[in-house]
Length: 101
Image (cartoon, rainbow, N blue to C red; front, side, top):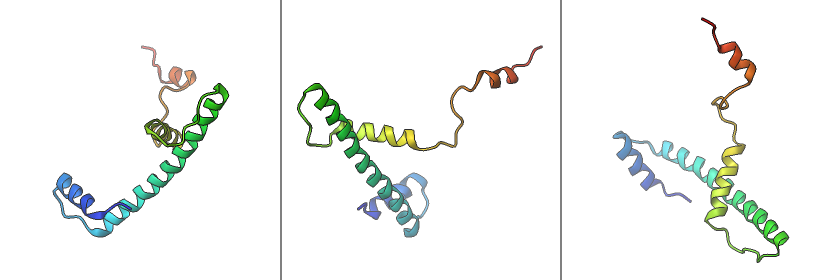
């Protein structure tokens, strides 16, 4: 699906280093999987939108549009577990980290 040559050129341009084809194929395989997940999620987002439109008595959409893609990206990013800690923390954690001088 993704062509390897433009990716190779971009990688070389950004890094200034030669790039093996196997590295490029690994990268394209990863992104092709992500694109497939995004496409399937965008179909679900269109279904959700049409369900809400049906409730409101509005017309149904037949095409996946920009908003479906945006919502799919948000949904997939929310579902992925991040290695980073959550923002904030519990009140107990904040009290334990507070030192009295």
